[in-house]
Image (spheres, rainbow, N blue to C red):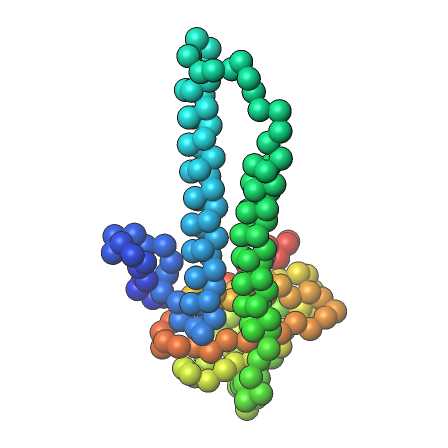
Length: 193
């Protein structure tokens, strides 16, 4: 397991473990943007709530005699602005998703079968592994996955990949390892008893 961490902006702030695949930087940027956007919205709303509670509290000198009768411009603005922001995030995520779905033609093909409490992996040369995956650095790898029994979820957090694997169907996931190392491979779904 690698204990190296990536830092963003403040060297004392560790948000993510170091990414070790071609997918990781895209996922990290999108997550950071969503975190900042949602955090900014939460702070703005908290500020407005506190400001209005103080300004319009009982006994304050705020003028309440002539409330505005038409605030449609404000209502349209606070509806359209967040809509455009979140549609932008959606388009960004959709673009990243589509890129992550198309494996390069020269990708190394590895077959993966999920079974209760284990992953069985087979390389093109016939080599087999259980609960381990050895791949070359810098070469695209395409995983073709199926489940023998229940729903599984193949995940390697350092590569920022996670793919559900269902009985009776095949799913694919691809990545390119960018750093040599030892990284955890998980089933991120409880297999059941």
